[in-house]
Length: 296
Length: 299
Image 1 (spheres, each protein chain N blue to C red):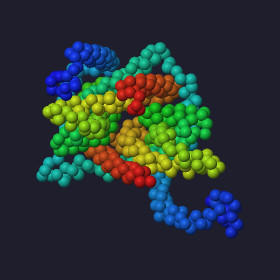
Image 2 (cartoon, rainbow over the protein chains, first blue to last red):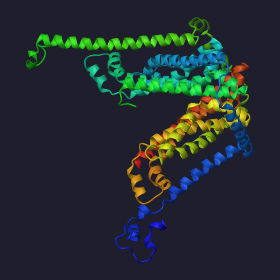
Image 3 (tube, each protein chain N blue to C red):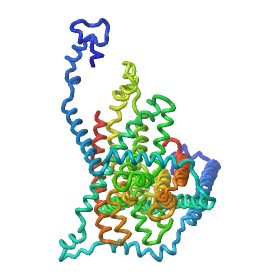
C-alpha cells in the first residue's frame, strides 16, 4: 500500500493526484476500507485445517523425500527406455489393434445399451412424468446406489456371469452408465419447458400423450448429446477395464507394464491417446450436427 | 379441417393451396424420415460389427443370467431376526480394519486432490486464452493438461507402482496427475469467461502479470474453483476405492481379494461401506457447493 499512499507525507498533498485526499477517502468509507478481520481469520483457520490434514495425510500415507526421489529417478529411466515407441512383431501389432477395436466396441455397445435401458427408467425418476413421489424417490436412490459401485467392480461381478472377455466389459459399462444416464436424463426431463405439456393436455391429450409430444421432442437432442459425450469418456474407461480381465487393450497394457517392455507401453499409450482423440472429434461433430451450433 | 370452422377471412384459402402445402409437408417429412432411416441403418451396422468384435453372446447371457441375481443373493449376509446382533457382528467381523482402509482411501483421495488442485491452479492462468502471457505457453500447457487427463489414472498407477513401490504413494500421485489435467481444463474454461474490465483496470495501475491475476482474475473465480475442486474430490474418492486393484493402496486391494477368493459376505460388507461413504461425501460436497454458489451469486 505504501507505494500508492502519498498521504503518508504528512499534510503535503500532490496537486491533481488521484490520491490527494486519501485520508479523507479513508475517513468517509471506513466501513468499506476497514480490514475484515473475522473473514480473514476464518480463511486462515480453514486454510490451516486443510493444510494440516494434507501434511498429516502425507505422513500417514508414508511419503518421504527419499522415496519420491528414488521413484522419480526410476520413472526417469523408464521414460528414457520408452523412446522410441515400438510394437515388436507384426503379430503383436495385430493383437494390439484388435484389442483397441475391442475397447471401442465395449465403449460403443456399453453406452448404447445403457442409454436404451436408462430412457424408460429416467421417465420413472422424473418428477414431472412420474406422479408417484414414492416410486420416483426409489428410482433416484437406486441410481445412486449403482453409481456408488465403480465400473471395475461391476466388471468383476459380470465376469462371474459371462466369463472373462469383452462381453463382461460391455455389461459392466452398461450397468454403471445406466445409473449415470438415469440421473442425467431425469434431470434433463425435469428441466423441460412445461408449456408444450399444457398445450397437449388442453387439446384433450392424456398424460402419456403429453410426455410423448410435449416433453420428448424437447429433451431428445439434449439426451443424444449427453450419450455422445459419454461415448468419448467411456472409451477411456474401456481402456482400463481389461486390467481385471474384461476385454480390451487394458490387459495388454497391464501385461507390458509388468514385464517392463517400456517401448510397447509407450506405443499402447499413444494408441489410446490417438483413439480417444479420434472419438472426441467424431462425437463433437455429431453433437454439433444433432443439436445445432448454439449448444456446446 | 379448414374453412368453415375458421374465421371468414381464412375461408378464401383455395383447395389448391392447401394441396400444395400438404405436398410440401409430405416431401419435408419424407426427407426427414429418409435421413432418420439412414442414421438408423448406420447405427445397426455399427452395432452388428461391435457385437462381433465384443464377443456378445446372447445365448450365453440368457443361459447364465441367473448367476447375476444369484451372486447378489450369495454375497448377502445371513442375518436372522433371532440372532441379529451376533449375525451383524459376524458380517462386519473386520470392521476396524476395513474402516482403517476406508480412511486410507479417503486420505489418498484428499491428498491427491490437493496436489492436483495445486498443479491445476498453478497452470490454469497460463492456459486461458484471454490472460495467457504468450501463445506458445498456451500451447504447451494445454497439451500437458490433455496428456494428464487422457491417460487413465489406473495406467499411471500401474507405472508408478513399479517406480515408487506398492502402497498408497503411487495411488496418490496417479490421482494427483489426473486431477491436474481435469481441474486445469475446467479452471481455464472458467477464466476464459471472466469479466475483462477488472483486468484492464489493474493493469492500468502498472501491476505485473502476477499481481493482475491475483487482484483482478482470482476474486472472480475463486468460489467456482472451490466448487469444482469439491466435485473432483468426490470423483477421486470413487477412483481411490479401486486404486488397490493394481496395488496402489486403499480398500480396493481387500475388495479385489474378497471377490477373487469368494469371501462372499466380505464383498457385500465392503461394498456397502464404500457405497455409503461415497453417498455421504456426495451429499456433503453438494451442500457445500450450493453454499459456495450462493456466495458467488450474492457478491
